[in-house]
Length: 486
Length: 95
Image (tube, rainbow over all chains, first blue to last red; front, side):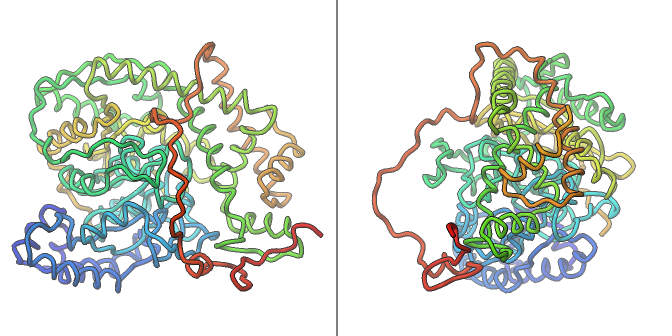
């Protein structure tokens, strides 16, 4: 009984809870029990919120006796530790925030609480969301439930692994250059990065303000739509939040792809990509054709190869500004030296990990006098070209489909000493953040038991279309039903 | 294009990041390597192309200057590394 309870989707759990076959307390206890049993091997959690979860479960049970309750009521969610939870430690997997307890909830947390969600814990991540493997966590790496010697991806590795391993029903992550989609692909779960401005960033610890978005990681596309219904929407506290109405994302899930025009940008099948991944994605695209979509295999987005450089100038530049606030004055780790400057420098020296320092320095350099034009300004201009190219493509196509990553999950330790190699694992996801577009990664197969993800990209506020395409593919395969042997 | 030790130390100073000698050498190597890969952007013709700062078309999003309650001071001071009364205690800024 306990094991099948931890294999549920949101919509399945909702059925059982609303029909009173199961209580939220029973469901939550099953997940807490599983977490304590398997997390020592996975390490997806920085904090497990047992008491809070059970309290919320009891509250949910009282409300589930009535009608009109949210589909998310009483269902456990794991929240990436970059999202502020009032009264619950929020660390960004960094020593500099190791004991920070936020005095407020992020907008998305407020929304989930309003749905009577059950917050089961805070997920491990790459420090300050900088990384593609969760190996940059200051605490410990998270392991891929499909192969414990491999990475779950990053930076939302804890979120993705937690869903895959049945330690939570769903999770929230954040995505700046691929940090929801790439781990979703690596862990064989569904992960969506909304259009920039679709989900409020209020309470999201900022990494790169023009690129960051919060999004769901779930077992399937229906769950993804349910979470989007809850978290999307205008928030006046986020000055980049777009006042666009939220429609019911579950309404577009109707398996028929007739008339849907899909483009395959050839630049995403990068040189050196793993052959099995390319084959799996091409097979999946063939399946989309079977389902009625018109597929154009010969699309070209020539500026794609520049996206890596554009991203690794813009993101660190914005990060250098956003992380200037960590000074040991108002909160967080604080080194006490005799002078103010030394206190400041040593706080940051000992509080930040290597990758964070690297990116702060890259950004500081790119923004500094004498280099601003050559680097930051140039990158922003190329950013315009990348965005224009996508806009052009979306005049002809409803969605673009690509691999999520060039490879299957790599081994822990394999890329940690070569920052550039690590950056390359995000080549398929970075351009999407640069252009502010929505994109989803869904399971598309396995190679030697290791997950392969397919990415579907939409036009701005085109979440309905990408969910529709994703759902149709998902329903024609069984990938989303597979679970790792944990 | 290789960064000099001085340049690395200068950047670290701007970012207020303390670095050990090993850090300086290691970052010098890694940053130079990464920056070399950015040279590729020189190939792109960006004449008359405006920069994009963010992907939405919102401009000057402001709110009215209205006084409203903020967070309670106790909540804000709760994470203070060093506190004195209702203040955050720091080392002297000016000697």
